[in-house]
Length: 561
Ligand code: ATP
Image 1 (cartoon, helix red, strand yellow):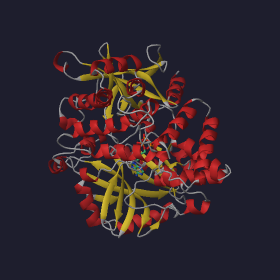
Image 2 (image 1 turned 45 degrees about the vertical axis):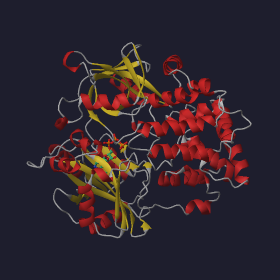
Image 3 (image 1 turned 120 degrees about the vertical axis):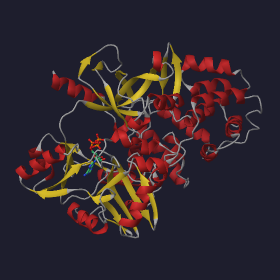
Image 4 (image 1 turned 30 degrees about the horizontal axis):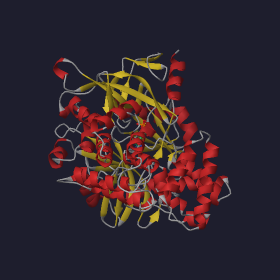
């Protein structure tokens, strides 16, 4: 497939805001290419990616480097290119302006750019490391530009910096697949969704043109899937209403979700963002090898940190370093040991166990996991139909410092996403939201070198809208959690622009923020502001899909009023 065809498709999709129209445009395009038996990898490009979604690698090109590449390839002055970017704010348009009519060759002489050329080159660029890496990356980008028309250069650049700007979500692609191959049938659409959440690979799904083929997609140890999520309940009664009676109650540990895969002895560890964290947790790998029986499996767990001397559990913020830190891992592992609380099993010795009722899966967990105090254990659980018993289990959990309890329906299968009635969470009401940082400002005095004040935003559909500015909660010392210094480094890497002292950054870093209350405010694009916000944790394990929505804000505001 020619890259130009994709570019024309992008333009057509960007030309309408109506979801249905977008799905139809896409379905027509797919129908045409299905006839030719075209490889479906081009769909990654449509999602603004070059790797499958289960592979969280990125092209690793910062905006600054992309600007350099545009200047280098076009022979323009870097300062001029930067200036145009500051006024336009879209690197794609910068590329379109400066790469247009590139001087090297005429259009007819150019070798036609294929979709796969773009995918493969961008994949190669992401792998370049070591000495001279920047120069080699610049040369490869220049090579691509030299074969591209100005419009192609626009989309290549947006893909390079992971900012496609045409709002194609995977759900829309699934709609289009349902239209193309399944006559828009509702049950087929549900199956598409399930298999997508299982495989996280849009090209694989698009290659399945029948229910039979779709059904053959299975879990594969080593390849991350999404996880089952919980609904919120307000009290024990609601918990029973949601999950039935009797139900299982488990402690809700304050750590982070870890999916542990064993593919014939090869252990890999994934966060719920599908990020592979195996190299950060050699202690977990060892604990699994020694204490979980089976040739192949996928288990679901919460990993919690504790103080090695006192064996007191520590809040997530304290162990989040274990996810972030990529060096001196063995020292950190001694300072911040973790315990694995296994609460589910999705796959065992060659077979999916997702369809088994939860109580059967739990029995399997108990059978295969050898309890080793402060290393690994099945999550602490009771099964009860008594409100009194459930209530006291909940209070005991709170007394020992856990966040609350999780409630699970005994006869439910494992499902990806948020299934009402399969799993619920009960915790005391707190004023907190997960939000994303979209901007930052420098501190003053002692903290002048650091970015210490952050503009945070919630979701509003595909967009992010600001809800406040937060400047407290981070730490001075690394042992206590995320420091201003570390946050500053992370923010500088994703900087988009700087104006009047405010640095704009890509919406990537998720933080948990507590606040006193919400009030209407014209100062922020959401129309609301959090009063007295404070960061309680940086959440490298969460993505912007997990953050609070504007709807959530409005609901809380109304309730408080
Ligand atoms: P959600 O995960 O439901 O979107 P959230 O991200 O705010 O919400 P929580 O409100 O903390 O997370 O609740 C769910 C999370 O609790 C799970 O994703 C899991 O990481 C954690 N958890 C702790 N203990 C358990 C347990 N025993 N069973 C299931 N999940 C548990």
